[in-house]
Length: 309
Length: 247
Image 1 (cartoon, each protein chain N blue to C red):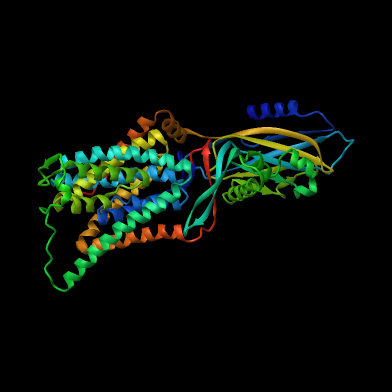
Image 2: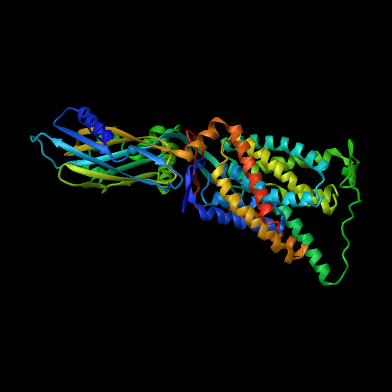
């Protein structure tokens, strides 16, 4: 069944859209990430113009993260104080990101930038996650009792000025690294159409030493807020948010996320992290190949005025 | 019915003076895009009215031009092992859709001068719109036409005219599902002995209707409100799913 997307100005199969929304939603529920880093490339590959894909995926990520954030909120797994600082900073980051996005688009280097960023970002994060997960798996196999990371441990970032106390996270740290992380996540998220949960969670754990019980909830809330801000910004500046496309993806995504979350209970944390690392690395390699391999068609075209693509 | 009669009346009065007159009409002057839109098919019917002194055989070329857009064609080259866009040519006021349907091979039914003067071939359109010159312009024009053809936005069918009688014909035009919205121009050339004997222009429009149109207009005229509604929709869907699956 075809459905017409009024902003993308093309028609796509409704079941295909709900299907990829559901599949990505399943993975996002399983791993506790937004799934934008999978969905945006998938949509672009299926023929949705890149600006529409990047802008509309924000809706799906916001919807999928909302149900997760709500359940963490009920359990008290969110540091609202910390989330507020992150959200404010990432709003500024998102504004810069949306501006960068329009600039790159007019310069014709959007594809290159998206490919390189995905490669570097996903490659880096994926490799780190893989190393960590493999190390844990080996330790577990050899029977050594693993010691959790010490949340109380300080690094040089905590010694910076403007220190603030975050009660729920039991942290007394400088606000500067918090803001820097927020701005970066906001910028990357708006630019690449991803929530950034898979960068934010490691950043909160390893850089700020936020305790495990509030990390995922706080990250999810931050992702919801930032995706909402990005959605409004994209609607106003590039006018490329397709509400029909976003809604089809949301329908599949929210349902898929629930099944993913219950499937996640049957896997151990380190196994999940290893699988997620594999997934992230696979996407990174896919983007790397497009940069290195000769393209099937060196020529490409785009509409620069009088249309929306 | 009344609209069809009116169109017919216009056709008869607007026909050019000459030995031959052409009357024609488009089957659907308003193509509406609704939620289940998956491309559209149009028919063009025409009749060549000859005054007996100069009977056929006639040949027909129908040129359909979609709304104009500014486009850019880019080329990727390998720099230090990485493929990236390095050169481009802009095309101003370039048709988003261009179909040429003829009753025979273009070079066999029309003089080359006539084809050039009317800019019948898609390459002529690209050349006219190109913002570059020389070999580079030629190369990028050719590639742009190829890319447009691969996406079914440019069509050349040299056996697409159905002659119902020696003077009456019909032409089918297929619009792809991602067709641009706006006014379309249909230009018909009637040829005898490779010379132009009659021509006619008419139009049709493609536009979104109903809810699709409402969404599009809202996103353009009330972008802030549109964005906020997207946010409410996203959070509402997420919240509903969370509540529905809690148990």
